[in-house]
Image (cartoon, rainbow, N blue to C red):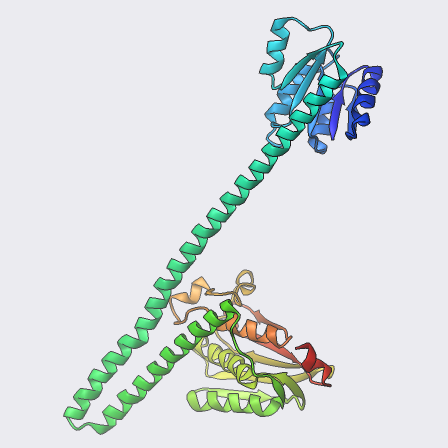
Length: 378
């Protein structure tokens, strides 16, 4: 759009006819003050500006337009029948004008210059946009590199921790065997097994995250009763953590369609997290319910450290760990991210309700299987 600024309506009408004849969209202002208001409100490709006007003259308007970051590149063509001396023409260019035409002017020359300046302006805008995109892409590459470096450092630390423990426990086993202390040897072997299990979980998480990123995380879907899967996962946790009490309430009494191993993986992750982040509590609540016959909801509640409100939305993102707990608890920050991806693939919902110092309640839902159409949609 072209903005014509002139205090004489007859001049605006004449210019409008010339420009609209060549399919240009035209707007107008009868004063410098009105022009500045319109320039800040609307987007213009070019401004045709009269020099001699009451109030703000053309030079003052041009200087103001050139001073705004949003409008500084808009081409300005001055038109004047009075200020035709060299000093005024020079002032026009100095105040930000691209050209200075003397009245009367050749309409064809004006149109040619308008087309040229608009094309140059469009190219300038395109280059600026490309530059901005490149800057954003470079910053994204830099951020990705920083994230990668941080992850490698974190992963190295987390993987070394159980490996160091395993090495230490195996040395203790050797000493116990040499001294014929069988009970001590069994104790250290059990601790070694626990550290190996931690290491296995870390490696599995790394592999699953890699598969998610490449779209290769496999799902073997079928229709099955959900309650036996839930009970099996709870039993695994009870056996693995005999010091903790898993209090289960409710049942689904429903079928779901999906990968039962992956669903069990989510339940195990929720439960182990509840135990991990509840160092001063040995009781975990596990509730199963049926919502309106359409969804199975599983809710795992602990009495642990809790999570600040502003950190809860990020819990299910890749590599995220709450700063307050990252130095106290092991992990790569991938477990809940993997859970979220599995639940999304099953068309379920997930979330958390938590308050610092009062524990957390993590939940997820699965659609109840009603007919074969659901299997086709999946």
